[in-house]
Image 1: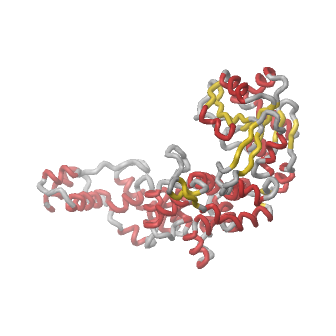
Image 2 (image 1 turned 180 degrees about the vertical axis):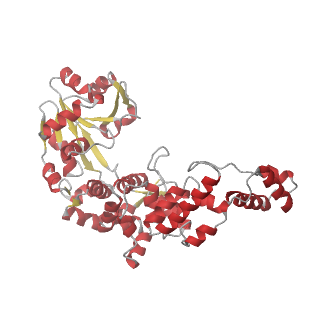
Length: 450
């Protein structure tokens, strides 16, 4: 099957794209192109992670485009930024597909005072601009391929298909110009190389090394300093790379020298201990929390907030599945120091053992311990946990009801304060050890100590 046939099949198999044939019929003289990641991934034979489609329309003005698509679904007015309409067909929701991008052909030129921010350029949107000129403004050759949906032909002025075959990330034109237009493209190169298991072309990589420090560039906006590249842009690209192919992401962050730019504290450790990244090279596709904790495992927990804010990993939208929660990372890292021995695990008070290894974070903690070579210790944890769960006839992860409450202790005459917590923890430890099995026994235990 040819590439063109594969693209036609992908389009016909996607119900959300049913508008295409109607559009082509209604506007006989208009051009309609599928561009970007959908074209790239189809040629590579990859399944798309998100149903994310981008189209370019030639021969119609913006008013015609907006009016027609508004009759076919929702057109978000907020989506006009950069000359792009965000379209959701009738019968579909954001839970099912991403908004479909509908744009007129565009050219871009950096503003005179551009510092390389992703908004620091002027956009010219014009129905008469050729698709080739539109593709010329894009970041990498593998993303600068269009599929003409009327003629069913590929348009590839920058040999993106060849670079897909060579498995290489290469900028469209001069890398200095492409990265000067938008500094975040440097991190996108690392993300694509990681995600696709591609190499980065020599000149492109050399330019990233030379210009990478500019990702931390700041400028004054209304009397306060702001990053030229917003941290949420950095965070999103980092999160995608670390989530989708952690070993490759770590490799390219180091090889591009962006590890020093974004995680200087980690790079200083690597400079001293070349084996530090070894557990990360063994990573399978783990939750981002695990990957991030492993990367920062030797960092002082008190500095974690600043590092995660600097890299944007905690600035993603609250509803994003990739958003990192800083307290969880700090909790996990703090449990690794000092490292636990098997004896520590076996003799740890039951209440503490429960807080460490029988809560929502414990699966991540055990995964991290295994990656750093603490397999025997994780086996000891699982054995002790299984013994406790069997004793109380609960399933793994099921909560064991406590035999005492804080109110019980307060009613016995103990004043509110640290002693209440200590008595609760001591009783819980005895309960989990099987020394106290009923509420009556727990109450007698409490009275003897009060």
